[in-house]
Image 1 (cartoon, rainbow, N blue to C red):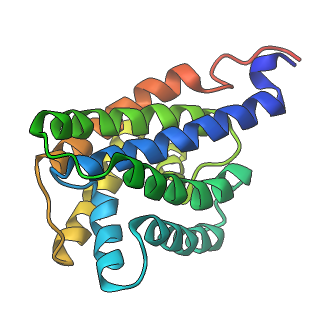
Image 2: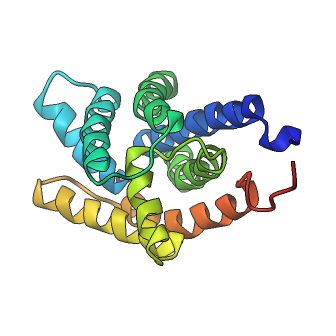
Length: 201
């Protein structure tokens, strides 16, 4: 077994990936030019309750986790870590980033956000320790013959439609996230998957 596929290395990749994922989402929130589709729902839930946007993510993740169990989708340690870690990282990153008033800084945050999320996805999904509940839907479609980028784009588009029905607000950042996240995830996952080029043990 090489170091690239050893369990400690994969756990490290999982941790790095989840932190990057949370930071990427927080960048889009900080940019405030429109939230990612799922986070339109998370923010709406937070505004209607005592929850922060991060704890709303965790709660929704738990509900999706139960749904994946009902569908008998394969889960793993990474799935549980995703539910707990990303929301906490989002809250922490938002607290650190604050509310910048400079439009250039906000636009840069919005532009980089989905790319950082995709990089994080490549690390943590590629570690092969179990996808998060939202990405579990994506990988479930992939196993049924739908390309990663198509599956991710469909899921984000469906979440966007639900967010609009709930009265969520969108902006150019939302559109950018929807059109960029699928191809970006596929790009990074192909290069960071620990089993993309398996070696004999």
